[in-house]
Length: 200
View 1 (tube, rainbow, N blue to C red):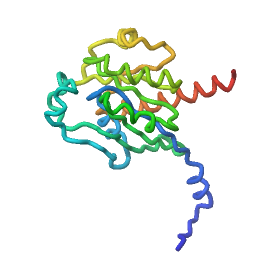
View 2 (view 1 turned 90 degrees about the vertical axis):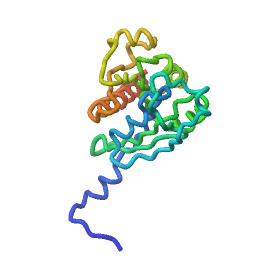
View 3 (view 1 turned 180 degrees about the horizontal axis):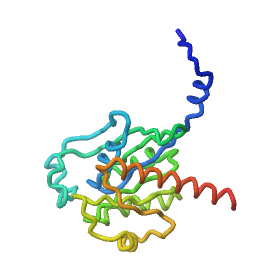
View 4 (view 1 turned 30 degrees about the horizontal axis):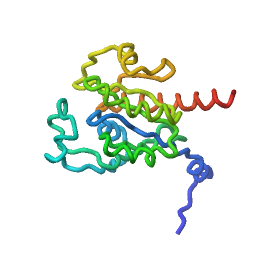
């Protein structure tokens, strides 16, 4: 049974929604699940497994001693960025042994957010290399654990060796406004890259 509506544009508004896929990547324990959970309007879909002693020789727990679970497939969330644009967020697993899943999770994405942990900057290199090699627009979101910004952005940019054309910003993965700013930044970056390509 169809429900009548007094708004003749309601159906058009629904049809004009633009779905946008964003990948959230980074090293093990960088805050990807927290990032997705902080902004999602729906209960995030998580594929987490309890960490066991079997992972002790595989995962560096130096700075994540209290971490009890880990993403083994993906995190999924959704947020309406504007009335027209809905973002679908796909968080990747961070451990190297799960990197084979990145191709599937990244298919159709317009851009990516790479979370960087200044305590273990080297962990974000695989994600940066991955998106650079595939020419996928991305931003680097520096997650200041415990809210402490230990290094300025310019120093972090030099350390990870990304050009000025790649946006980089601080983003506390627990803070909804920080996460939203990172998502707005990656969407704008992707659109600017697309416009620049169209002018060539």
